[in-house]
Length: 389
Image (cartoon, rainbow, N blue to C red):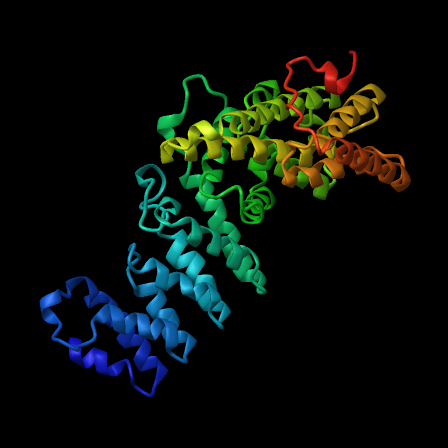
C-alpha cells in the first residue's frame, strides 16, 4: 500500500495526487526507519516534496493540512506562507498554526499544542507576522490576525495570576507575556503584531489600564506596550483613551531623566573600568551589555511616546525642552537616541527655524568640548536638566 501510494503521488490527475497525499499522511506515524531501504524516499520526504513543488494548489493544500505538525515539519509547513495560492497561505495560518496552538476546547483545553508559539523559534514567529499581516489578500491577512489573537490567549498563564489581581492587571500580564515572544530590538515586527491585536481584539484595547503603578516600574515590555498603545490611540483619533493613558509632561520628563541618568551610569562604568575588565567572564559581559541595551531601549520608547504628549502646559513644556536639549548636547549620548531627541525638539520648537538654531548651538558646543574628556554628569537632582521647580 505504501509503495502504491508513493507511486500515485506522480499521477497525472491532481485529484489522485491529493488523495494519495492524504492517505500517505495517515501512514506517516506508522513508518519505521527499518521500512525504508537504502536510496528509497521516506513518506515524509515525499510529502514535503509535494508540499513545495506540486503544480496543483489542491495537492499542496492536501499535503499541508494532513502533515502532522512537529518540530521537524514546522519549517517546511511555514514555507507555505509564501505559496502562490491564497487558499494554501490561508490554511497555513488557520488549519496548521491556529488549530494546533492548543489542544481541546474550553475547560478541557491544554495550554500547549504542537504549534504553540513557544515551540516556534523567534525567526518563525517573525516570519508568520511579516508574511501574514503583510499579505496582499485580505482573507489571508484576517487569518493571520486571528492567529496573533490566539497567541495572546494561549500566552495567558493561570499559574502567574496573583491573588486579588484585577482583570486589568491580569490582562496586562498576558500582554507582557505575549511581547516576550518577540525580539523588541527588531521594533517593526512586534509593533505590527501588537497593532493587529489592538485592531482585532477590541476588548483588549478597551480594558488595558496605565496607572501610576505601571509607570513606576518600567521594563522594555511595559514601555513598548504603552508606546504602541498610544500610537494606536493617535491613529484611531481616540482622544479619550489617549488622555487617560498619557502622564502629565512634568512627570514624563522626570521619568525620562531618571532613565537617562541610569544609562549614563552604565556607560560611565564601562568607560572607567574598561581596562580592568579584560579578564571578565563572557556571561558577565553579556549581562552588562543586555542591561545597557535594555535601558537604552526604554529611553528610546519614552522619547517616542513624548512626541504625543500634550504640551499645553508651558511649565512642563519648558522642562521637557531643557531636558532633551541637555541630553542631545552630551557627547556620551548613544547615536540611536539622538534622532529621538530631535523628534521631541521638533515637536517643542515653534518653527523649523528655531529647531535649526538649537541644533546649530548643540553642534558648536560639541565641537568646543570634543578635545576634552568630560565626565558624565549623573545626578538625582532634576535641576541640572529641568531647572528650578
